[in-house]
Image 1 (cartoon, each protein chain N blue to C red):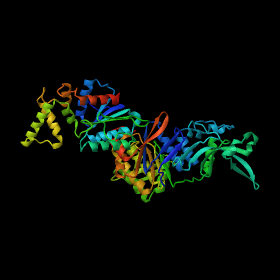
Image 2 (tube, rainbow over the protein chains, first blue to last red):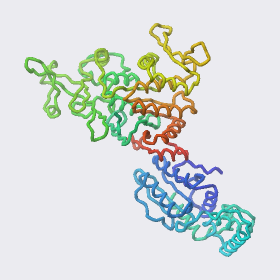
Image 3 (spheres, helix red, strand yellow):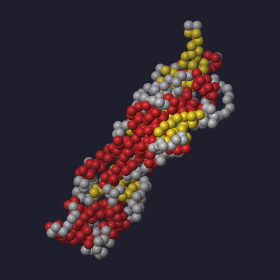
Image 4 (cartoon, one colour):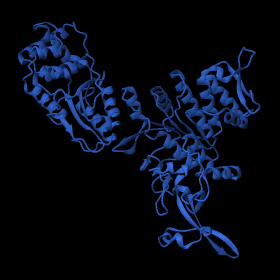
Length: 210
Length: 374
């Protein structure tokens, strides 16, 4: 599936994995299909596309942005978002990201904008942290021990910022079927879509694009 | 002398339009009929101080002089083709404001409107005097003999009034008379316009004549080399009819000279652009549909030479385009000369024409993520 939606209601993501995870949650919560996905390839490209879309206000109704709170951290990412919004003429937005997802209403010249910083708008992290939070804690904790063990035995090559990725995929390696991608893991309920964080995310999407 | 910004009121499809930041090289995009060409016309009128030659050229290019019958009647002015310049396609009434062009809303504007003139005796002479706004309230044309007053379409700037078209004179007569006898007094040294179709051979020959054998000739040849590396020289020769002038080029390692046109549209387009640019030294160059005939691979090079020459020769350039490749080329060169570019899109919202101005980062971000800017 090609996540390159060009319509007036669009959700910008960093990559294909984000799209699959979000799509699985949308299916679970019956989020109305009023919008499309555009996977931008990276956080910087997603931010640039945000700027680009805000410069064509007449063709755009709502822009949602889902990016990781990393590279380097949530504070810097949020500031980057605010800087871009300000430059594009959006002057009223919250100082800090809202825990249930930020939604900035439209005005005469600017479309509605929604922002979600993975995992939960509060902590530094990434998509995989979101997935870890909705996975069974005992499984994830054990996986974390294994990953640390493997690292201590010099069996690993992952870079430190990707530790959460290593952990969640370790967990998924033991499930049925082994090695499921994140989106499929939600559909299979290996990761729990009924978890409160997942529900909060789905609610934010529904409200943003409703 | 560059325009730092521009303001238009009541001209063609514009109610009011403000462009807040112009630079040396300005690129304008927008849908068909968004007002791009009208914008160029507005700039052209402003920098040429509404010269009648420019007015006529614009009317001709739009074929707005289509009415072939010449009729003398009291309401002559209402049929004058210049009516299409005003929003609503109507010559304004005496008390109406007409259209305005200015550097900004608060600056002294060049306006076109109608004014009434009466003849008064003054020291044994009959002087024509414009009636001011206050006098118009009490003005009753029926009290005057037709010989004693006349209504004109005029251009005004500050205290200067230029008479353009009289109600008593047919449009074509005015043009014939004025263009034959008038001297063009431009505010700027040189104003050049390259239309979508390009320049006529006659015009190109005239422009070539004015820079032939000067240093500027080298700049033109170097521009041509961007499209055809082997061009080493150019000259105009007599064509089939003695008044025709045809450009020929000399190619390296080829004895036989060939017509410029035989090398394709791209070379001719670059020729017209650079030739016009070097003739606009210290002035303004306007290009409609910059990309016409140019292959995507040369667009960036042509922009490169445009930015450089415009800087060296102090020319302010205004271009329109429909082409993505053209915008990409412009964006790339703008990054090399960040102070020298400006970019905006004209679009309509609720039937009002607005401008979306882009700075260098916004354009770059849009192009990089393939957001449509046109």
